[in-house]
Image (tube, rainbow, N blue to C red; front, side, top):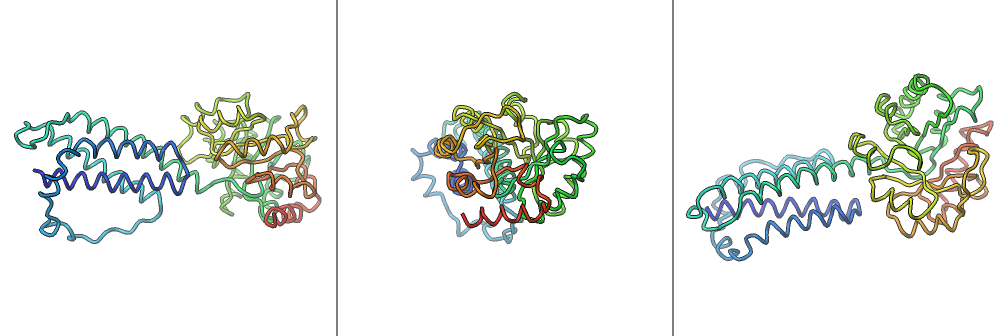
Length: 343
């Protein structure tokens, strides 16, 4: 019986440590890392007083299944997380069931409910961790182009989108404040298809329902839109969620509520958004020093001021007029991209 307990504790420890390291070193997620570490310490701490007995019962060399099967290769990091979370959950279930037996069998007086609670806690941690990894693989950085039909006028949105991507856009957002939802959905589906061809994230502004309907890679919300915490709950775990902010307090709240990136602006005066609050580079620097999420700077950014925006800590720059207003969209995007890469 002690051998069974020991081997399952080892599986739990190894699996949780791997998940913890993914959260800590790949995602830089302090909260998830701490939660996984706490769970690992709690489960191993239950048996700390019997560690010598458990070690004495260990006999890896005679384990009939120790090397019976070759380890499967993993397709990607989410597959590693899934495999190890499953391994931990299975071991928790084994211990839960055997601790339901009389103490005379295990010689350890532990409540099986503790293992059940740990198992359900693990399920939620696995979901959160997998979602973070899937969204991290689509993380926002570089040139972020916003397609606004009001700025484009009669120009074809799909062709402009394609040109912007060819020029180096790393993310495309559709912002449409005027047309009906049916019209926005139809256009979003076309833009999503173009973005998918180039493996570029497609983000929709404002509309969670259209985001889901067109299969967009993410949703961007302002301070007056559906709260980030609610949107994070309603969106599939692989969908990016961005939030516009003008203050440090808004940025910190967006991060804690589940945003994947934070837009800060307007950095400079901009004709693209009437009444936009100009926050300047100082605010950008302040937020950069306080949050760990990618920051998208927006508002009045062009080839002249882009270097100082990047120097202030922006991971991405969002542009409308600097790209959509250019006769050569692809060339304008390329120049901005090159400036960002140099800086």
